[in-house]
Length: 298
Image (cartoon, rainbow, N blue to C red):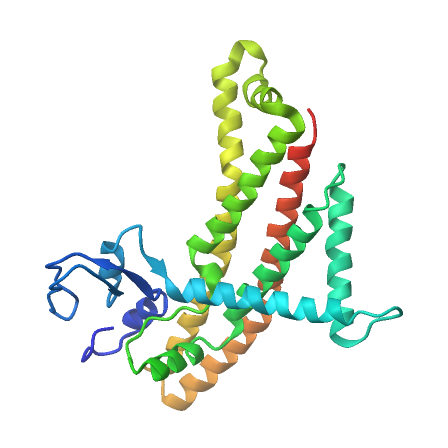
């Protein structure tokens, strides 16, 4: 939002859906405020167009920062519980963590036909990390951005707090899973076996080009579907929170708009808790299923 412009519902939505982007602007570039960049330099984008013009080699600072912070929170609490674990029945937070670990291990053991000590910790990490990132969607949409604006002294600072509403994060997770799928497919079946599965199914050796197209599309669809499913559901959830928030500044009287907006936010937040957990569970389960398929011989 440029300084001096009237805050509308459209500008409010655009501002909250834009990341804090750090990138490089070329010499002579005219910025959103009319300022001309004298020397090529790294800076924060002041508009969505500037973020776009920064190109591929730019960084969504808010997404990266929150994802790393939540990953550290996950490691810290699980480390503390593991360090203090004792024989006997756990209690409190330790009991919750033990139940989560057992839940993940049960799903891994039910699906995996080949024992692999990496899959359990991987599935647990994916599940908890995504749950934490998704849970940021429950935080009031204006709270953390307002704090960031106050701390930075920039009242127009862009700041998104839900990492999974950024496709860079969801595709990063899914591409990591895809690399493991390729690795274990080749490790368990050999290069010939892996290529054979792609080239000889489902119509045999006389239809190799057609088989490669079908199986290649199916293989590439796995990371794409993983990433887009998680991103789409969380992005839509965040957008609904923002649309409800605009009721408070709509044509309705302040008291009525605030009451109905707050009530709808609460109802959607309660429902959204299911989405937060469900999408993390779906991503974890599909990861286990895809890796189990990579371990199996046709």
